[in-house]
Image (cartoon, rainbow, N blue to C red; front, side, top):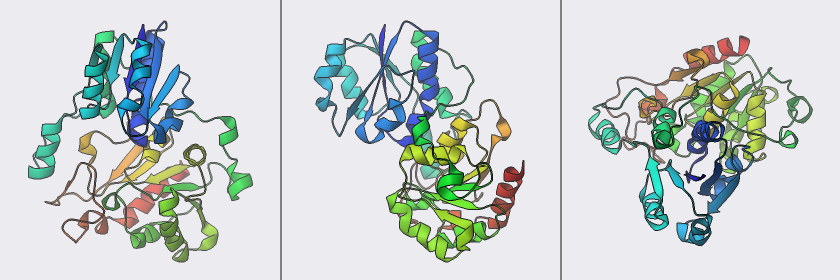
Length: 330
């Protein structure tokens, strides 16, 4: 049997599909498994030993459609569930299944603050798409694979010993998912361990602001200097990860690294919190409860629609720092 798994974006969402990929391969050992994603996220999939071949697109499925048709797949597992995958399924004309995306429930929560969402992680919802294959969840964490050459020794490269520092994923795709700089500085000043700042090139300026407001010897800025896999390698060696609702949060859960997560305009109720099926105490959630405007979006904005940004401005930095210090000391 030849199976195509489809998830186009983004980092965290693709990491969260890895249990489905693993279970397909292990429970259907004779299956040949291919994965289709966007080119920007190929690195997340390409090292996965459960994936036999990776296909990518830049923007349109037309870029790859002739090659996919030539593969003559037996089944398509749709883990994105959008117009693009609907078109792909129609054009390939093969058996397929998808997962419940719960558009109406999410809309009700965002617009009317009525929560009809099931208390179910999205990983568990993803497994709905492989029920026709009789593939079931093995109850293990996500996977993220790093080649040894991509895992930097933190002592040699950053001057901090493994498991003796806190990693802080300071970025987020949208500003409303990210603490203001002054709140990040407040937290870092209260932390007991050295802090390694993680993020992409767009986070470098923010990291420099943080450096200017903290003790330079205590904070190391790697933002924009590392690849995703290299950043993942840093996370793997941290004692704890402090993070917003980001892809690195899900990568950390794959490694079993303790997580302190801070939530702004999005909410864990959407089912995208850290996936620790074997350890309920593996992570914590910090969010400002009782705000009538939250959640204001499924994903986020570049500025608070209400202008006050209370979901982050009212975060208890004392409690967040104490949580990080406690988990780092375990």
